Length: 238
Image (cartoon, rainbow, N blue to C red; front, top):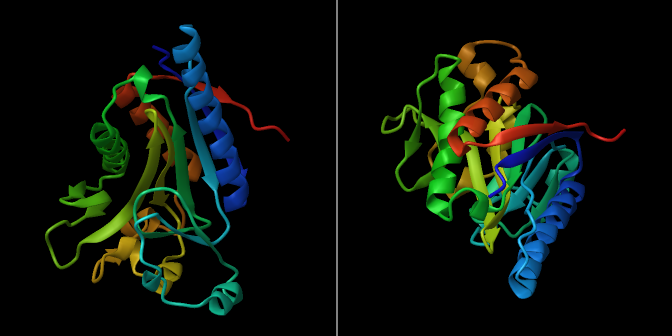
């Protein structure tokens, strides 16, 4: 079992371009697993953890309802945003500047074969990271992601999640609001859940801006501990 995870920060990258890159890594790992099974070989399968910043974009999961997007294409264009229907679970999600988006592309055969556990550990990674900033973040029963003040009229979501898995290989992931422009969330019903607010780390801390690099380091630290993984940092090609 390969516990090494190659971590790469892609910087600012178009959503479709990143999706294609994810699909490439995802399919390579699946093809290698098929080869191992067919040829009875034991070639090591890789694991990746991608960080990326996306320009304004809305994505709709397989089970999503398009009516949860509250504006039309013309209005999206006016706001400088794109829209994609994609192959992850979940409903509608927004990505944009000031948000840390993470895409773990893991062969869960290297860790554990349990998607429920996988999602709970990703949530725990975010919960532990936010605890370092003095915030008590929690899960909300029946709602994937990470929340604050669960069970109160002030419940608000700070991190959305949606994944896809095939042959125990994962793709897509999480989006943590750090310095996000929350106005963009007003153009949709986040994750199809009505009446729930959205927040960002800088808002909760009363700061203009929180260091994205610092948050990324904390996320990787907790990911490494929770998954008992060895993080290998890769440089982004220029």
